[in-house]
Image (cartoon, rainbow over all chains, first blue to last red):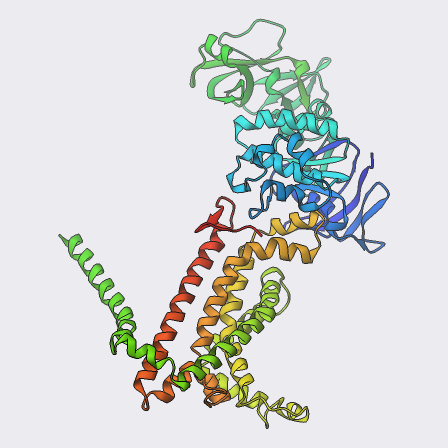
Length: 339
Length: 276
C-alpha cells in the first residue's frame, strides 16, 4: 500500500496559517473544531488548494513540491475526495455520477454499495445515507490511491449515523487504502480511524491512537475534545498522591503528580452517580444538584454541578434522577489525569 | 374598515398599472383588422426589414455567446486586480444612451475614427454596412447576456466543479459537462434578454449604420420610416415584434425556472429532461 506523505505544508488562511505534516498508512482522522483548517488539509492533498510550502507525495508520485515547483492539477492526482455535502452532480443519474471518472464501470459499485435500484435516480431524489453511498462509490470508482473523507457522518441524522458508522468501519478496513478523514466529533474519529490527530488553529496538537489520546491527553484542549470533564484547581502533594483544591473549595485526589494551577481531566464513563453519599473505594465525591439529563444514543449524560457522567437510562430510572435534585458524582483517584 | 380600504387602494393601483402596461399592446392588434395586418407582411419594406433584423440579430447573438460566455465565466470564478472595474465596464453599454453608443462606434470604427484608418488600409469600411448593424446590436445587447451569465455561473456550486476535477476531468471537460449544464437555464434567460434588446435596437444603429432598405434597415428603423408613409405597415411590423417579444419573455421565464431547478431536488421542468 502506497503511503501518503504530507511534509510541512503551509497554507495561509484568513485567521492563521495552516501548517502540518502527516504520514498516512491506514486510516488517519483529523479532529478539531470547525474552522481549524481540517477541510483545507484535504483540499491541499486533492490539489484544490495550493500550499505555499512543503511537499505532498503518494507512494512514488510527487503531487506537490514547493521547492521543486511541482504542482499536479487535481485530475492528475489519484485521490477520491468525498465532500461533506457529497457534491453529487444534480443533473446526472446515480450511474452517470459513478461513471463520471471513466475508470471503472458502475456495476460492481452499484452492487457493493446496494444502490443498484437507484441507478437511474438523480441525487435530488435520494436520502442522506443513499447520497453518501453514491459519493463513496463515485470516489472509489476513480480507483484512487488515497481516499479523503470530509465529515463523512455530519450530514446524516442521528439514526442513520450509527448504522453508517458501522458500515464505514467495515469498508475502510477492507479497502487497503490510505484514508484521511476529518471530523469535529472525537467519537466518530475514534470509531473509524487507527490514528487520530487533534488539530486546532491549523496545527496538530497531538497525534496517537484514540486510546492514547484518552489516556494521555497532551493539553486541556485535547482532553476536552476527547470528551473529558475539566476541573480547574490548585495542586499540592499529599503523601504519595496529589491533592487538588477546586475553585469551589471541594478537594479531590489524583495519582498524577503536579503542583500549582492544574486542570484535572475525568472521563464521563469513569464517573459513578448515586443519590446517597457513597461509601466505597472512590476517593473523590462531588455533591451537587442535577443540572441536566441528555440522552446520547443508548446512554444518558447526567450533569451534576460541573461534572458530566455517562449512565444508562435504566440507572436514571432506578435512581429516580431528576433535574434540581441532589446527587453525588464519585470517581477514583486512578480515573483522573492532570493535564 | 381601514384594512379593507387599504386593500382596495392596493387593488385599484395594481389594476391601473397592469391595464396601462397591456393597453398599447392590445391597441396594436385591434387598430385594423387582422387580415389587413397579415396582408401587410408581403409588403417588400416589411419583408426586407424582417430579413435584415433576423440576420443581424442572429449573428450578433452568436458573437455575444462566443465572447460573452468565457468573459462571464472568468468574471464569475476569478478574482483579480481590476475585477470590479471589468464588471462595471461590461455594464457600461446598459446605461449609455444608445445614440451616444452609435456616435462612439462611428468615431471608433468610422473612416476618420480611431481604428478607421487601419480598417481603411485593409480595404473595408464598417459604417453604414450590414456588419455595422450587427456591431451596434452586439454593443448594446451584450451586457444583458453577460450580466445574467455571470450570475448563472456564480450560482453554480463551486464544489461540483472541484469534484469533477478530483474525478479526473480536466478544466475543459469540467466546464462542458458540469458547469455549463448547471448554468444553462441562466444562460438561456440571458440570451433571451439580450436578443430582445438587440431586436429593438434603434439609436446606435441609425447613427452607426443608417437606415437603408435591404441593407441596414431593421424592423424598428422601418417602423419609424414607414410611420408617415404606410401606417398599416408600421402596425404590422409592430405586431410581429410584439409576438417575438412574447416568445422571448416566455423563454426568459423558462430559463430562469430551469436555472433554479438545476439545484438538487428537482428533476425536470415541463417534462423536459435537464440531463446533458
